[in-house]
Image 1: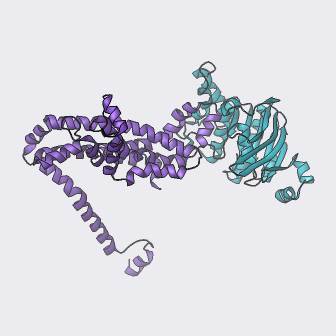
Image 2: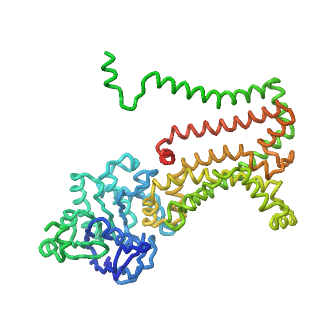
Image 3: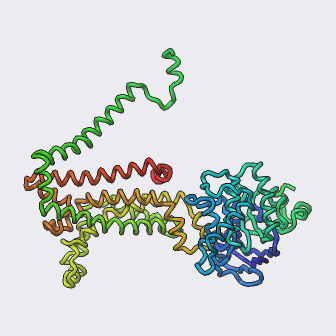
Length: 239
Length: 287
C-alpha cells in the first residue's frame, strides 16, 4: 500500500512534537524513520497507525484520505517497543487475538484460526512455542511473536517502533535479517522507527532522518551517506 | 570460626543479636497487647455463659436482623464500589487530562475525613429538613434513617479501597497492551474484557476484600445516618454497641465474635492471594 503523509503536524499541549512534515512511501518499501529521541519519529509512526491523531495535515492510503480512520479501521500491523504481548495469554492466543476480535460475520472458524496461527509460528521459525506464556520467552522470541501477532490480521502495512531496541547485539543482527525476509515474502509496506543509524542504513530501502520534529533528509542509504543534506545529518550518521 | 571473622563478614545492614532480639520481642509484645489479647477476649466473653447461651443470643431476632442487614449492605455497596473503583482507576491511568492529581486526592478524601463527619454530611444533604431530603420523604423514599442512607454512608467510607489498589497496578502496566489490542481490531469494550480486566483481576479482588471488610465493620458514619432502629436499620456494629450499653454482654460479644470471624475469613483470603499472586500485588504496595 502506498502511504502519503501530507503536511502532518502534532502538538502536545504547547510543545510541537511534529512541525508540518510531508513524506511519500512507495508501495512495498521498507522505510526507516531515523533520529535521536525527541525527534518525532515515534509520534509520526503512531499517527500512521491511528494511535495518535495529527493536529493538522492529512494521511493518504493508496490515494484515499485516511486521516479520520480509527485505529481498528487502519488495519496496521503494529509492533510495540516493549512488544506489549498479552501477558495472561499463551503465544497461540496472542497471535489469534486479532482474528478472534473480528465481527462474527468475518471471523474465521476455530480450525481456520488454528491453521493460520500454526502457519505464522512456522514463518517466525518458532513452531513449538504456541502453548507458552510471554514471560517464558526470550527477548528475541517475544519480538518475533509480536511480529506474528501483527501479521495475523492480514495488515495493509507493518509499523514497528524500535523493534530491536531491547535486544542484545547478536540477536539484533539475526532478527534484522528476519524482518528483511518477512518483508520480502509478504511484500508489505513497512515502516520502522530506530535511533541506530547502522540498523537503518543496513535494513531500509529508504531512510528518513528526523530531528526536533522535522524531516532533515529523505533518501536511499548510500545517497544519505554520500551526500548528507544538513550538518545535523552529517553529524548523526557520522559520515 | 573466631569472633573477629564473624564481625568482619556481617552484612552492613545487620544488627547485633541483642538489638535484633529486643526488636523482635517488642514487636511480639505490641502485637500480643494490641491485637491478640483483645481478639481472644472477645471470644472468651462471648462464650462466658457457654456455647448454648451464645448461640441462643445469635438466634434472637435483633441479632439475626443485624447480620442480615450488614450482609445486604455489603452485598450492595461492595459491587457498586468495585465498579466505581474500576471506572475511576481506568479514567485516571489511561487518559491524560488537567486536574488529575486533584482527582486522585479527591478519591483519598474518605480516608482523611472522619466517618462521623461523612455521616453528618449525608444527614444534612438528605435529611427530612433539607429540600432534597424532604422531597424524597414526600415521595416515599426516605434516605436518612433508612437503608439507602446506610448504603451511601458505607460507600463513601469504602470508596478509596478498590481505586487505590488498582491505580498503581494500572500505571505500572501502562497502555501498551490496550493499544496493541486496538491495533489488532478489538473494540474498546472488548479490550476492557479481554486485556484490561484479566491484567488487574488479582489486585481487584484484593481491593474488593479490603472494601468488604471495612463495609461490614463500618460504625461511625452508619451510626449517624441509620438512627439505629432495631430490626430495621441497626447493623452488626451498631447492634453490638447497643447491646453492650444495655449490659447484654454475651449477646454483644457473640455478635462481635461473628464480625471478627468474618474479618478473619477476609484476612485469610487476602493472605492466600498475597502468597499466590505476590508479583502482581507487589506493584500496588511499592507506592
